[in-house]
Image (cartoon, rainbow, N blue to C red; front, side, top):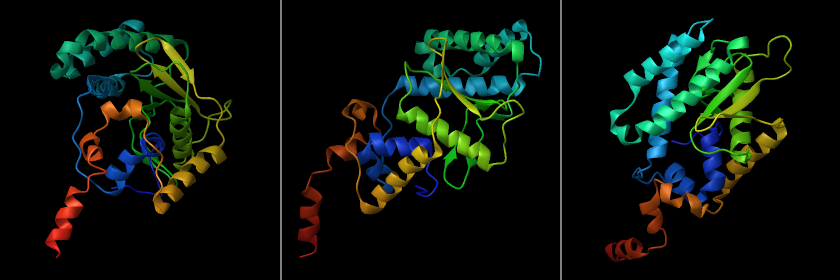
Length: 247
């Protein structure tokens, strides 16, 4: 059920990008049917592999230890239901190993790994936080940062501050980096004011209360779990049946 006062970044982004689906799923509570999407499933699975890797890593790993541990976690936790896409998953694993080795000169063990957090304004789950930087793994193509990522990164910072975390000496603020594991790119979230993020949140809250929802991005329709209810949104058949029943 939607907690309107403390939305998650995904809920805010869903409101702006898939307004009708947001209404049907989050407000009306209609039944949904998960659409086939191997990239989504592969992303979930690789998140799980990386989570297990960080649960085993120690403060001063060697390149050999990083590679051995990552490959062991992949063997133990890769979902065999996705075996058709194993080659693609192995490519993302290699890029993750390269990412970890790049961190070695100033390696910091994670403080948080996929930890559910709640503040006065938001809910969210940072993928990994090492005390300085929040890292978010992306398994699709992400060439530049859009509002979706700015909302996500801004909410993470709010969650950290509201849960008692403070930047360590020498840093003025927490960083947020989106790591695209289909390549070796790391995109750092640009400075985003709290006012900008709060305005996005307040606009969503007021829109929901007023029953106003933005139009859907049609590009996302094939991946929407609300496709079937949406197809009948303008159908008056059941209204006619109710009218006859109540005569």
